[in-house]
Image 1 (cartoon, rainbow, N blue to C red):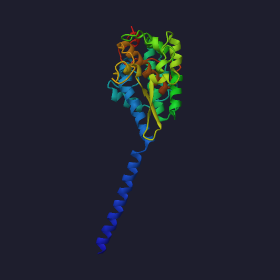
Image 2: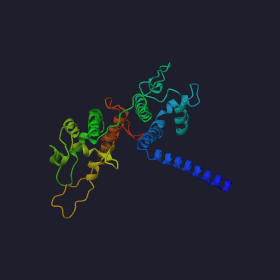
Image 3: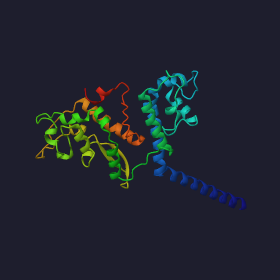
Image 4: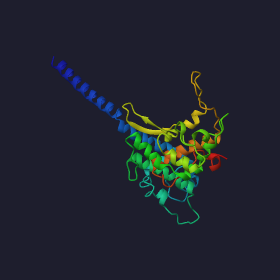
Amino acid sequence: MRTRSFLTATALVVATLLGATTSCGNSSAEDPEAADKQKARDDARSFYLTRVHLRLDTCIGCHAGGSAPRFMAADGEASYDALEKTVGLIGAPKASPLVQYVHRDPAVVMIPEQRSILTQWLSLEATARGLEGAVEKPKTVTEAYKQFADCMNFDVWSYYRMGDLAFAQTDSEGPCLGCHSSGQGSAWLSATSRETFERTKDFPYIQKLIVAKLGGNGSFESLEPSNRFIIKSSELCPPESPTCHPRYGLPPNFTAGVRGFVDTTLQNLVTDTCSSGIVVPTNLDAGPKDAGGG
């Protein structure tokens, strides 16, 4: 009886401990803040693997086994791990040697494109890790829209030739500016690129570029491309509708320009590089003429 009682009591203690451990585990897994932080870390790592590593070929040649200090590798995953393990490299761009170091050999110079992509990646890392230089996430949709509007850069806008949208042709009713030159239909597309740029910053016109993603409780989570200019071109008109938007086909260079401008602005917003207007095409072979309109 004593042995049986002892075993029963022991089993209850073990079950209680296991239940407490499971409860703690579930609490951690359901912590939205922890999940957001992990996602930010994963996104920063993914950004390096998909966008940064391939552009640092000249750096890898020396720092993955050459005569220079070794803190990179030919493989992207191995290179990220090596950079992460080397103290002082991953941090705010203004302090990281990856951006700030000046080689003794004047012939060894980081090209602007490499500096730009490194700046974006390191800013993502600083934000994800809560380091100096981290960008504070907006708390409301209104605040998020304002941040995006403030981050819109006219040099980036011009690079992607966003002003050309006003001259996109409909199938039967002329260019888009014919109906949207003063904001009709919540789209502002005038003959002047600067005017279109400035007015698109305002609500509701800004929603043609971005839309807010909300959580289950209605709280703001993030900004995402709305792609309204792109989607509208292929929307079907309901038979019962008395009026329909004119059909139009958006040329590939216009579509690429819209995507490029929005993606670049979102990246500059996250990495706190809005004022510099950094432009790094997502396609390794892309250039200004490909990205914005030919």
